[in-house]
Image 1: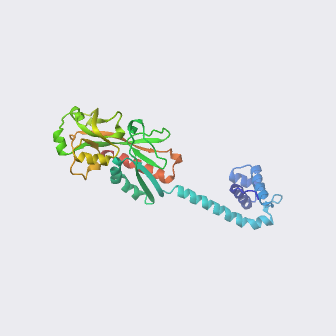
Image 2: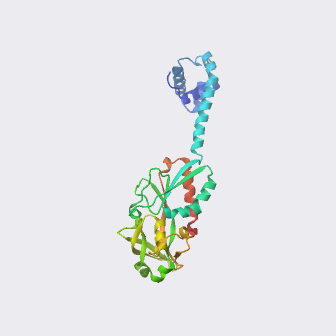
Image 3: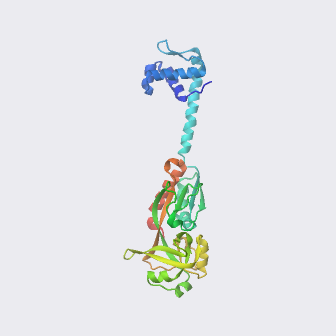
Length: 309
């Protein structure tokens, strides 16, 4: 038996209701010839005549009368099936894979994840550490194939992805009191001369990091180059070295709020600001659950611009 098209069956059902090819053509917006062609396709697939074309008004054959209830039931089940599929697509339920560097995770845990899961209780979020590799800060970050949403300090290397700059994260310079007393500073130039614990993702050249230091008092921003003998891809290892008086460390205050033996040492009006991007595939390729989470995350991060330490 040839395959039946649901659209042809729906046309047949309308003809059975209106008892008129012309009325069905008007209802559906097709020509009478197209209506007749659809009826013929159903009859050819079933191998039996269903419509009495010669009668006025148009009627059903005995076979058509017998099959009409089953045709109605088939169409109802078919519509219900696709409605369920569409509803699932539009339900923010299931897993969302979120990737970000370890240095951003404390911010997400504090500011983003609680309201996200409260807003969408049917979501499951997998948070995976995705630290930038050497020089990716300058050359563009890698987007894992399993990732739905990447939050990063840099744009992606793959230009087919979408990158939204949602905020500037305010960083500070941390050290133990002992280290600061050994390497005091009053100017950016003096700070630049002190040894730093480096983040290798931000190494444009070997054992150097470049940061934009802003004096919020006068609005002046200047790039400072810092050097050191230690370079890490993991902020938590860098923190442990900082606690052992091995150098200054640039990090988010939120990440170190529970660490008592190292302190922020920049003057109150100074700050290091790093761009933060939300990166994702084109929206037409995203499941509804990912679109919903993405939009909410972008809104949350945009709203909290002034709240991030």
